[in-house]
Image (cartoon, rainbow, N blue to C red):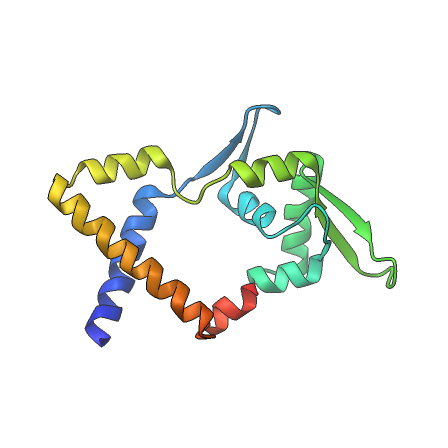
Length: 157
């Protein structure tokens, strides 16, 4: 099992870097968002506010770094900052309609890049790759249902 863990940890970055979205485009506003900005949007909601300090801790950055990121997203019209009604010192964040739109459009992987990578495989290799990914996805779902969350996965809950 240890060899398989090491192999998966070695393979995953190659796949991710070959296929991930580097930027998210907003054609309505003619803007480009970085993958980091898109990731911040992915952690926010338009109804339920998220505290800036909570988000910064979750994403592993300082409050000042997160504040700068939120400033850019707010200027772009994607995020609204507000004070917490119970504790005025706390800054709450919510998505705007534009933020919700970008969040719903974004994908971690670029379909064109995935298509290019899959095109490097034969039909039989693609079939095997999809079968292997389906098995990993199923096992991931089962592990999460059983409470087998890692510390990192628990931080997302």
